[in-house]
Length: 191
Image (cartoon, rainbow, N blue to C red):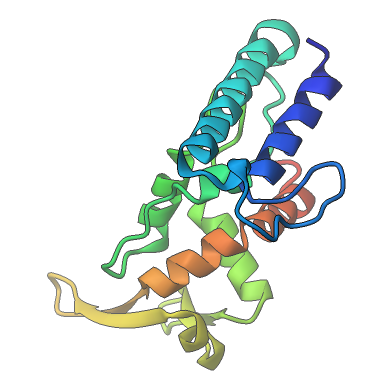
């Protein structure tokens, strides 16, 4: 199967799953056969199988192990990413995101790449403590997306802040993964 043709089929399946006619790009206005729950599930399974098949073809035929693709997750896979009800560190959420990619062909996303993007967007900023260590702290804008600060104390009695990502903040990151992926590709090309 030609790569271009297969990718077109995958894209068209994604449109159908989302209730859009691929030939006209119009949303289905009335309940049709394609809106049937079973048929929609069937389309999702075909999309998933074809996507997996394309990955295998990529690995077996054209994959250069020295050059992995930059991190990205397609729209259907994004919907499967679990959102923790508990506020979690960004490193934990990065591990969750990396469970949704094929690490043999794609670079993992790093927590530092996401936090760098959040800094550029104005949700985090860096500050230097008296001892010279640099920390990322929340800006006033961070609360808008559900980022929270928790103060902890280490075994030596020193207090420190941990940035945590609520369910709302995790969803914000998932909703912006395309932008984050583009940011990573343009700012971390030698990583």
